Structures are given as structure tokens and as C-alpha cells.
Length: 279
Ligand code: GLU
Image 1 (cartoon, rainbow, N blue to C red):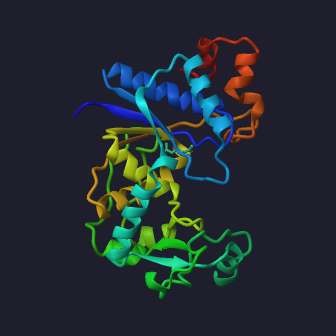
Image 2: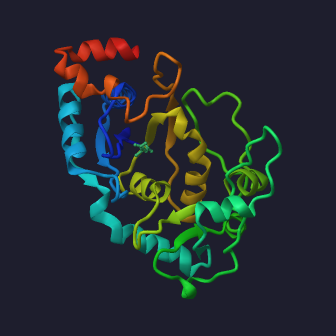
């Protein structure tokens, strides 16, 4: 098995220190294992993705001294491939159309207890609907209970990062109570959600190690469930610590003060970025 990892940014804003940390960690690990480092542009969010942000990603990574094997996979060029997978799940009766808005979902959830945020689990309002009744603007949801009947439980994966301690058991109640019927096809026709596109491409690109921030750990059980449903291999996951701002908050795309392009403009060096991220 040749070590192969990827950095998979969404071009919806400038890369910041947290992205630099993730990309450098993955790049260094690939080098150390004599493996391959790939760049994947996750631009299925056609509303927020911008070519200018994508160009900045290439420039920032090159400035950091990161090189990647060509070609770069741009997800917007593969929507048909993702849609084919969605339709294969539809043919197995595992997805259904959903027209609920965020406020419909909130209203259908039982009244929240004081001080307790209700889990964001979809209450299943549209679960009775069939694909033949799909209307433009409907999202497509996974019928998670039906999906769980077709796989071996509990769902398991190898975690080599900071989340390895205290891994919960990903059994049927975990999925029905904490994940629910996840959206796999978004409201925009023929646009898949990030969770599914990433699973399809991790397999298509023979990724052996997914190295990414711990904020994506909670997405992993669903992604592994999708791998099981689609008979795709499960990579090893390495969830790393998050780079936080001075107040301890996770960096967001709008944190321009920590954008790599800002540090470049300040004439800092890539070694300064490595030092700032603790690499
Ligand atoms: N595109 C995702 C993001 O920018 C990363 C997905 C992943 O690494 O699996 O947050």
C-alpha cells in the first residue's frame, strides 16, 4: 500500500494558518513515507466557491513550499459521477427527497429543554416520500435506518490522530440519534453534499490517509458508513489539533488577519508559518 494523502480545501475564502498547518502536516507525512500528496479542490458549493480563491490556494501552497502530484481534482468537473452514485443509492431505496426548510425542521423538533440545545437530527418529516416524487429544489436525504440494515455494525475505522482516545461506539443508536437522515444531495439539482463527494473521491484517488482537522471528526462515522454502503475502502484517519485564535476559537475563513496571503504580504517566510503552527 503506497501512502497517499490529500489536502482538500473549499475555495470559499483565503487559506489561513489552520489550513497551512493541515497542508504542511499532510505534505510532510507524505514525504516522510515516500508517498504521494494530492490537492483536491472541493468546489461543489457553486454558490460560495470562487475562481479567485482557487487561484489564491495554488499561490499560497506554492509559497509554503508545497508541491502536489498533477492533475488537481476539481470536484465541480465531476458532478455527473457523484450524481450517478446518488442514483445508485436511490435505486436501492436508501435516499428520499426532502423539501423541509431549516425552520420546518426546527418546528418539527420537540420543544427544547431550557439550556439544552436539541441535537440537529432531522425528524424524518419527508421520509415517507419516494424518489419518483422528487421536485426541483428538493434535497436528497439518506434513510439512515434503512442504510444501517445493509451494513455490519458497529461502524469502525482506524484513527491515528488526536481523537484516538475515547472513541465512541458507532452503533445503530449513535447514527439514528446523533446523525439522522443526512443530506447527500443538495437542493441545487445535481449537486452533492461534501460528505458524499469526499468519500467518492478519497476512493477514486486511492487515498490511504485522510489528514484533517479534528473539527471534521464527527463527519467521519457517516463517511465510513457511506464507504460501507458503496463497498469502498476505508482510509486511515488522522485528525489533528486545530489552530485557534487568541480567544481560543477555531480559525474561520473570515479571519483575514491570519490569512496566508496576509503573512506573505508582510514578507514573512514559510519557516515562520511552520514555527507559528508548531510544526
Ligand atoms: N473541503 C473541506 C474543508 O475545506 C475539507 C474536507 C476534508 O479534508 O475531508 O473543510
